[in-house]
Length: 314
Image 1 (cartoon, helix red, strand yellow):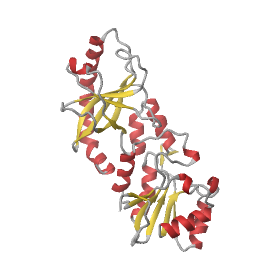
Image 2 (cartoon, helix red, strand yellow):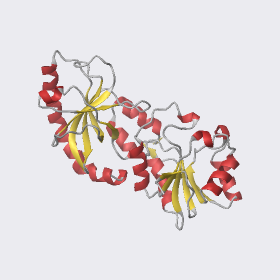
Image 3 (tube, helix red, strand yellow):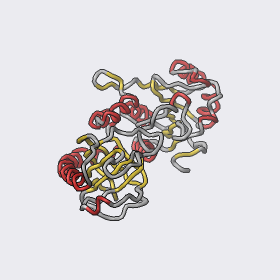
Image 4 (cartoon, one colour):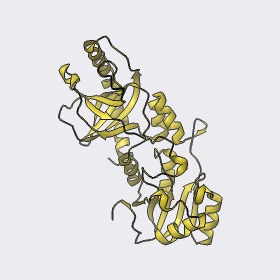
């Protein structure tokens, strides 16, 4: 059976419920409570990236699916049941519990956050879930919010941090750095002319675009982190297309990466995007940024790289 499935389990399950955007520290506590359930297979009930509940559709997503589901695996989740939202949106709260959790997923334990909503028009919450679990003979575990600096950790806080370029704050809330992971496309190869080859990654629609500017980054290739420097923006000195993208110079590797999906983790913000007089001035500044970024990125790789690998299951 595939990790993401619409099949029914063969064994009784503990099911973690949620959208899990960002899979932050609070989300991982929900996953952990399902994973440690003795004698039960830990599953997740969620929705595909392109079929989210109505209340979640306006929010920009944080991480690519590969990161999201990799974290779930690393937390001990065995399978993810992810039907289209349209398949369940008209079910009442009790119909969702009976038809999906009890009959489809063989659920014996339900785990969710205290603010989880379900049923037609999100009409039910943790109180109703507790009542339904008692009726259908399931254990119920409601997980309180996790707080940092006196405020609940939330996907909204993480989005705000990324939009401000506050990557240390985003990493603190999630436990891992903000990640761009899209397929590398061909660029104009201007960087190679100046001894600074880059990979070009378009920013996918529907995802948070970090504050435009230059970042210390770490690029994950072939099982290893490499120090790098990344520009997020529209490259005003060399392009008039006005299409946001990420352009990364990776230190220590120089091979063709076209067509590959490369995770680039943004560690810290260096400066805003600037317009230079000419390409020579631009790449002279990039060389300086690269030198500054290399030192910081290497330190992060030494101190946070292995923890991030373990957390993300990479």
